[in-house]
Amino acid sequence: MHVEHLIIGAGPTGLGAAWRLEQRGSRDWLILEAGEVAGGFARSVVDEHGFTWDLGGHQQVSHCEMFDELMDELLGPDGWLCHERECWVWTRGRFVPCPLQLRLHGLPSSDAGQHRFRFPRRGGTGAVWQALARRLTARDAAGAGRIRFRTAVKHVDTAARRLALSDGTEITCGVLISTMPIDRLIASSDLARDLRAATRDLEYSSTHVVGVGLHGAPPASLANKCRIYFPEGDCPFYRVTHFSRYSPNNVADPATQWSLLVEISESPRAAADRARLVNDVIEGLVATSLIESPDQVHHTWHTRLEHGCPVPSLRRDRALSGILSTLDARRVFSRGRFGAWKYEVSNRDHSFAQGVEVVDALL
Image (tube, rainbow, N blue to C red; front, side):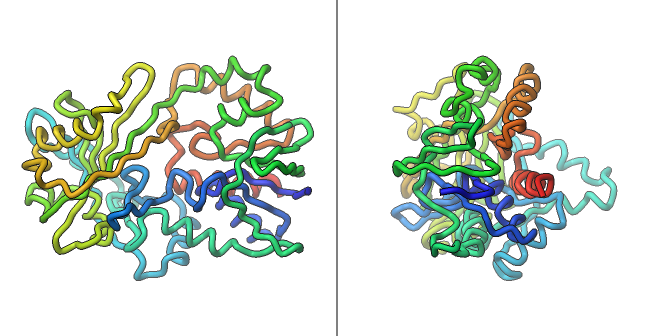
């Protein structure tokens, strides 16, 4: 099989590329997605208790009118809830507002709106990307869907732009847009030997996400708080999101339940004790006054993201320059949060824009 524009990954970048191809009148495209649903790092999960969890405490802000207009179209005017960006730091036994929060009055009036964010009323962050995926479910000439789920890439011959897939088939393409982590792309390609040294300079941290479902109602101290950062050593986590405040529909029964979304970073320099992690999280929530007692916990949900955050390390830009120029010369374009490995432009609007922009450059 041959396709002109082949896209690896149905996250914001891959879907952004497909959306732009459709806009530009190009129908010869296909997305390969290893998972079962669209969204990538921005997907959401509903656990066995009916609680919704994101893969991290996402806040939907945007720097792009095109992105905002599409978000309005996908969920409609009633599909969003809007919140003040109330970010705090727990330090020295108290909550302190984040520094930027105290200086918003000094920003130009055109920037003042960035202190607000919106969140889907139902379905978590992933609802946005599943809606876009449904919009892109057009069939090709043979009647097959243009987004193939549960289809992983096993090997990439970048010189011939030929891919071996997990189902045993092969596919060739005129252009490959990859959103998989670039270190994994190189490791599974014909460039593994030549670029292995460069990929070692690409550092990242892993992320444990622990959802904590709770009985009762949140304390008054959390009424105006969206997310809280924890720089001290009295807990294992670096950030907690008051997730049921983002939407009451993130819990099964808003009248009797609420939820917190906890993030723990892990790296070769700072390993996490996985056997104790959830217990340590609950103890940390008590120690930082977010809950009064472990008896409040209804249940917990835990997942680990091997690639959590790309690290802007000292040798990153030099390594990326060599890797990306080699891939670009072969019409293989690596984009997205870990495809381009730029933490500073890896929000969802940035990632979506990377997919759009690579298509515009090609066409």
